[in-house]
Image (cartoon, rainbow, N blue to C red; front, side):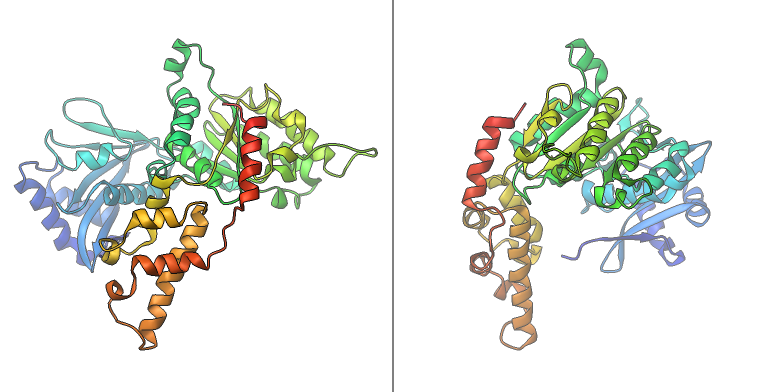
Length: 427
C-alpha cells in the first residue's frame, strides 16, 4: 500500500473536499461550518489534503483570527486512522506557525467521528459541544529566537513511535514527563520537576530518539546544541555556551539537548589545565543556572559516562542519570515492522527476526532491512528474480542480510555498560 502524501490544496481538489464534507453530513455528523464557508476558506486561507494513488482521502482547512487558529474543516475517509489525521494536523500547524498564533482550535458536532483523530493528536475537549484545542508550542514573540537557536517543533507522535522499551519509557514518563506537564500534581506529592538529566549507553541505542520523544510528548520545542558549531563562533566555546544559554532563557518552554557531551565535559586533570577545562567549567556554571529556570529541561547524552568529569555527575546538577540500552524483543519487532514493506509483512516471521537481531542497535536493524530490500530490487532489475516483492523478500532474506551486518555494540561494550549502570545510574 502506498503511503499517503500530504500536500497543499489545489483548485482541482474542490470536488474531493465537497465529497468529504457530504460524507460527514451523511454520517449524521454535519460539519459546523457550511459547505460554502469551507470552499471559501480553501481558496482564501490554508488548506491541505492527503492523497493516496492521487485520490484525496483526507483534508484539513484552517484560518487565523485574532491570534488564534481555527480549523474550518477536518475530514477523513473511513479507512484512514489517527496517524494520517495527525500528519494533516501537524502540517497545518507548521503552515500557520509563522503567524505566531497561540492556539489551534476546532468546533465539531457531538458525534463527529473525526474527534478521535483530534484527541489522539493533542486536542482537548472543553465542553459538550466538543470544542477542542491544543496550545501552539511556540508563541509569536519566541519565533525569531527559536529560529536563531536552530530549534524546531517536533511531530507530536514521536513518543508513541518509540515501540517497546517499556521500562525506559515508563521511567521517563514517571520521572520527567508527568512532573513537568502536571506541576500541580507533582507539587501535591512534594515532587520537584527535573531540570537536567543524563542519558548514557552504547552508541546507536536511541538516546537522541528518546530525547526527541520527550520533547514531542511534552509538546515543547527541541533545541539541539552542537559544540563543534558553537566553537566556530567569536569568543570560543565557553563564550558561545554562555550566550546560547542566555538566548534559550527567552523561551517559555524548551527541551535542550547536547549529544556526546563527554567531548566538552571530560575529566579535568593535569597541570597546566587541559584545553577543555575552561569549557567544562563554563558548562558546569550554565547547568547550575539552568536549574533555576522553570519550563526548561536539559538532556545530555553520552556513550562514555565514565569519561565525564566527576563534578558533572554530582547530585544537584543532574536529577537523574538514566541508562539507555539495546532494544528489547518488543522494540526489535517494532523496528523490523517499520522497515519491512506492508506488501510482504504478512509472510514475515517477526519473532524470528527479533531473535536473530538480539544485540543489534536500531541502526543495525535498519541497515539489514534496507540491504535486504535493495538486494531484492537489484535481482528484479537484473532479471534474476521476480517483479513481485512477495516472491523476493522473505524471513530468510532478512536473516541473510543480518548475517553480513556488523553489530555496532560488541559483547565487551555490553559488559562495560552493565558495569556503568552499577556505578553511575541514578534513577
